[in-house]
Length: 257
Image (cartoon, rainbow, N blue to C red; front, side, top):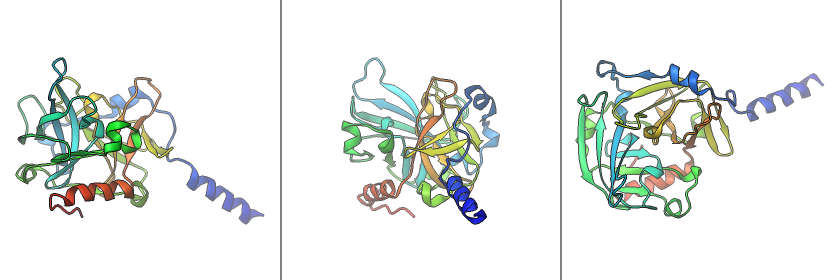
């Protein structure tokens, strides 16, 4: 009888989400750390700021977001940063190590076109869901990567077996998008095919990598909420997502590790 009890407890334990299912916005806001130029390390230099311009949005043609290196020429970000459901993304500037308006390591400017150098699922363009909210950017060359700190290993959430602590870094400033913040938390859990966590996020956080201390990028930040105690959403990396990203990359002669 004792053995049966232990087995039942074990099943309940592994089936339960990691961490608490409540998030305190104010606690998370005070916990995060703003990075100064002298504090940039290899991990943080893998995370980049996006200045995105849409072709025809006369009233709001520019916005900021976050992405991360998964290859010297490939960035991963949220699909809603790139979607052409509204007006197409026409060009962008990618910046490494942006800590103030005038302080950064390197920038690259280039024109963009869907399914030429930016990619999201066609089904996401027509009917977006959090599960499919991911996309990639193919850089013109590897020149920007010289200033990066390496790249994350794209890893499915299930295969990563994350530790008790996960990390997020990004550019959440909705006005300038030029301030790099980082944070770590034990308060995260997997529910309904999505990752939930208590990271404090703003508009520019979209596309921020969720990663482990083993350099595994396991999710992309895709959803934030205004309610103080509602946890934010990440799109977890799955084998299907990895397969799709590899297919897009192979069209450019790029092969991910």
